[in-house]
Image (cartoon, rainbow, N blue to C red):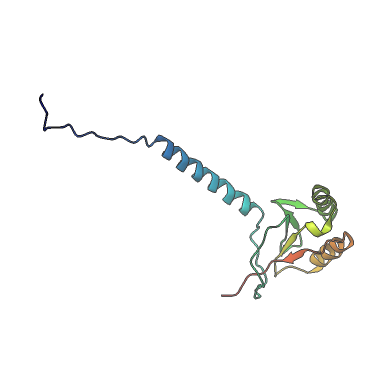
Length: 138
């Protein structure tokens, strides 16, 4: 019986391909999510006020630029088109205005007529969950 004192060192190999695939998928996911969240936010000069809370989950984000134009998801819309979009969102939520949250982002350099018309129109649709976005001063 011969016992060998010299054993070969076993080299364990690890396949890195699945890990690299997952990393690339995560990169693609985060790039896509960032682009979608930036699409709802126009470059606006928001009013500088202390905010009450951070932005929560919203159903619809409406931007009003300095010229009074209404922008939703990168598209300029009229007041009638906005109300149509709100009606579509209400239908998706079972026609319950309490479940619809609208975030209004208005440029502080603009006129407030469009904002007032929008708030009045949303009030007629019984939408009470309307949040107005502000920029917290530093």
